[in-house]
Length: 327
Ligand code: NDP
Image (cartoon, rainbow, N blue to C red):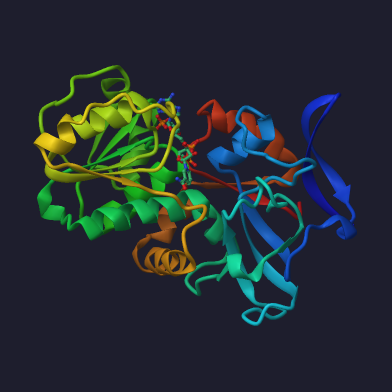
């Protein structure tokens, strides 16, 4: 038996609670992992509260990521005691996930825990941080350099935003952080933001083209914010879009793309191929100031994750939460 959060949906309603689960119920997979740490991402918030259609099979153990140690494996790449990390692949959505003490998954989904990180630090980064890295890599592959100008990061106090700020600052960029929480300005500056703007400046319907300001954008928010970010991006600049915290709509025009040559990159972490993941985790090991992340990471117990999921969606959580699944 092991402890895990189980989400049920039936005549009694949608509910999530910590339960004792029989190992015989674990889904199919060629690697069994003893989970040490998981985390709470925006998607986990949606899954646990039922506020978004994330979970496609019931009962479901949520948790789109985890870090832990292999217990047993019939996969050629993994053996007992290997330290591993998992992000995405539908885990916590269609396949039992990381908010539990044990998981059984496909070995093809795992990546090795980078030597630079403990399993707790890997989950402080989590899928949010790994996605932030994918966004930064998209801007780099576009050819952006620090001397090209300011980079806008939206959803700045969230997981993606916080890690994106820390990464970009370390790489020498001037980072402008857009947030609804002005009270966290000092914290964002400590992460590396050079300027803070109120997210209301970007949240309402805007013009097809605005004053050219951003060399690049990391957007975790979508909707009007993404549209305004594109409208304010400089000639031949780039926008990496990964999130929908404001909304899934994209009320934009083609003007930024056809008149300013702006490029919009779509970032998906869930089904990203293995080679992309390995590169992103190597880059995180090289370019993330992990001490900065440690400073914004808070530990919670498995049983606290259900309440914290609601707080996350209400924007009440700053930085990163790591979940000690054994507590
Ligand atoms: P968090 O909840 O940690 O952060 C989201 C942030 O967005 C909040 O902290 C808040 O920042 C801002 N925000 C919240 N609501 C609104 C709103 N109504 N209008 C404007 N801004 C808002 O989430 P994550 O950082 O983990 O994820 C961010 C987004 O990225 C989510 O939509 C998530 O689904 C998506 N995502 C996508 C992935 C992919 O593969 N494409 C992978 C991981 C995440 P502040 O308080 O500073 O304003």
